[in-house]
Length: 358
Image (cartoon, rainbow, N blue to C red):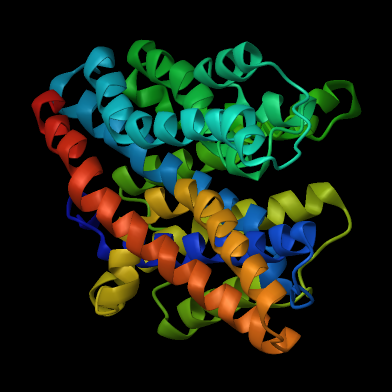
């Protein structure tokens, strides 16, 4: 079946999502430092939604792989699973974490740039090493470089719990268990009694929803549209969701339910169109390095904007040109740096993952 092969279209999706996150943060930081910015179009305000698609895709891939492993071996090697996660996520995560902490606590004071840290270095380390960056960013104002770590924490919290549970649960009960969790947690998340779930962005139901469609896929239950027209309409709705406010529902429950269904359907349908979508080689490669793009982009945007502050003070450039140059340079520098990181840093750890595959 398709899920047993490499799905290049997922890289295309990752690339698009990574770019959506980057362009959503550029105007926020530009405005904070006093540079011209543009964010009136909805596409510049959809960074969080892009991360939610990442969550759904992660659940589809990871829970699907755990299902495959248990079906193949009769069990799940929890140790190897966690080692693979560490080798994929930890090197860049901790590099960005410790750079960010050093930047705000040491570099800025040395440069004479005022920044009021509302947390101690010890607090910053403990919250983020303990994989609760989502709580950390709500309690403090840690700075833009550290803000992106929240989603990595959400995923790790989820998999720290779900992997052992799937180890004990019978393969025949995977679908019922994950579906029950998804529906139950969705209700709790949107209830006023458990408001802290929403306050600290514990958005686990997007990840588990991806797991549901992965298990249904394994059971041979087709969720994709056989009609090319219907798949086209699905892709159109997905694009409109990010480029217009047509589906920006005021009711949070309706909005979340719509996004869960839309993102899940998108994933199972782009698998069908894999042979077509994998032809977009540049965006596929950007998707391959998207983890670096996601974690590094705040550092690099800050660097680019620092340079443009100097340029803005020295030369008279129109606001329109300045905005275009900031976007172009930020994206280019982020992609180039992430490419170098992937090739000369991340691939070393990724190659070690093969030693821990079952």
